Image (cartoon, rainbow, N blue to C red):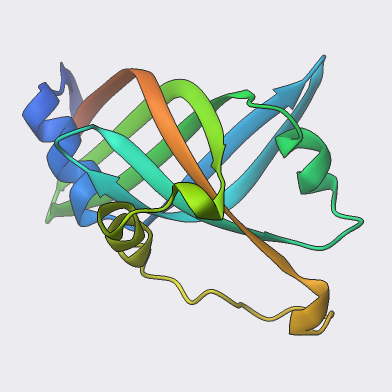
Length: 155
């Protein structure tokens, strides 16, 4: 028989999970059309903002969704556990994604983008000259998290 418990995370626990991870999913929507992309990010506990580097090509669908300052969600997830105990934690941030112009960068914000651990260029069919790297700041209106623990008793 398995028992399941669910606990809401405190702000400190949410910040800790976001700080120890570097990847998640960015979810956008336009009208009734959803769009989600894997991301790497840096997280600043003081401002509680996430900083993203997004790479796209001139004909990218991603650019259509990022054309304005859209409402967005960021989801970060982890799982663990030991033996018969499984633990799942997730954080959802709901807020606005802002494009950051290069002339707005300061040494402090440059450091935040440096926290994104993934390389600037993954494997792309197009050459680097065809790619645009845009910087974004995600300002959450709400950050919530929960932890689910499942204990499986072996009979």
